[in-house]
Length: 393
Image (cartoon, rainbow, N blue to C red; front, side, top):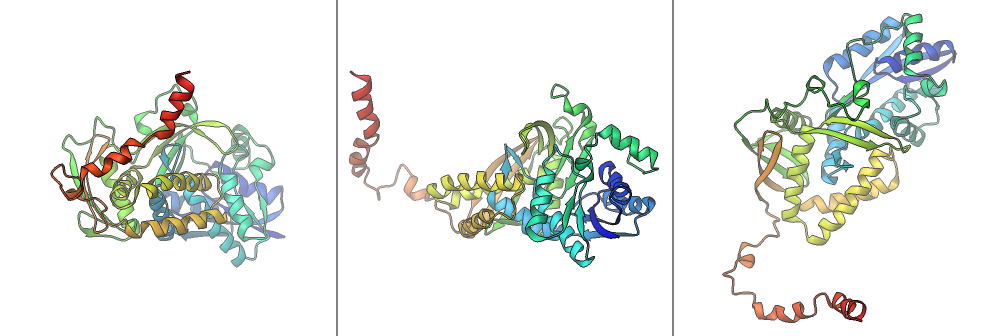
């Protein structure tokens, strides 16, 4: 009997996949849940569900620190955002797939399986990573059998498969963000109910008193909050806690999926909003105008590669080299004020600051203002020629 390793969350899709792989594909199933910062019960439940279904071997793989250091910190340096929101789900998928591939090699599995449908983004993200680092066959039972959610539920009931019944929405959660979709949220005219949110306060319930805090960066990544040094995991968790308390990080967006469908998505990304905002403020102080302009191009390209599941694309590695070099000077402190859903930059300083208070001062005599006259005279020369030739005929 051939063996398959299934990326397993314990939800409806992957729970149904266990039985399908056993019955319709005649395979021995090994399940694995990769911990990238889900709630504790979302790590414990897959092991319980796998056991209840009859899976003989289940793995829980702790990848939180690796996710924080090798993926989230890269995203901060790149200011990675897709269509206006910080990447979270898409950022974790390559790491999850990489850990599944490692396990498949250890288990000498013949195939790797996932529970993605044919309409979503994750099928691309998982499979491009798997094919980049494994020769295993890939099986996607829900997609391959063209199952609807109702058909999955019927199959689960028929086969005594335990499925979560207390969740109204489809939730994906990791260290860097929480996504909420499905059910009534599929109607873009329905306001997202307050009970859908867990990481963030509503602006109405956020504290009346604003909070000031200082974020310290070294070479583009945060290392301390209010002077307290922390590791990558700790600083991300603390940023999520503080920003979420003040109602920061709620996103309601009509998102363009990889295959072209538009979907209504809700996200909670409080720590990401806080840290990327602070990071961009420090970049303004330390990078040149040309670096900042080019950085916007890099950010868009980087973010689209990650969103589209192309983590193993060489261009992503090339961009990381550019980003890492640019970030060598992005060190210093940023002081922010958080208040009822808003973030305001109050101050920033860096040993690599390109800002000169003396040079910009109206009282400075070192730069002779008269020397600029020639530059100003010929500035916009082509535009002036255009106006004369084309507008004054």
